[in-house]
Length: 90
Image (cartoon, rainbow, N blue to C red; front, side, top):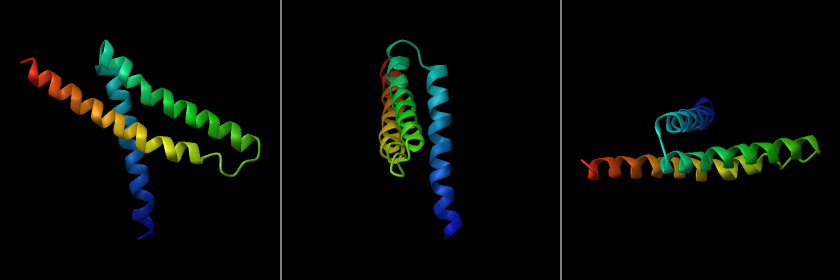
């Protein structure tokens, strides 16, 4: 069970990163602006976590763990909304 509990978060992170990169490459206009929101949020959370760790805080990485599900959810909803918009315009 120990291998599975460490593999699931890594798979989620890899999936988020792949979706994020694909969104930044494929989306145009307002969709791309909306796709930058989770990238910026995770970048800020990672920066705050790194600064906190450098200052000696052992709770600083919690920002990444709090931001990750929100960013993943935003990105999944964005892909779904874009897919629905493309279907509706056909």
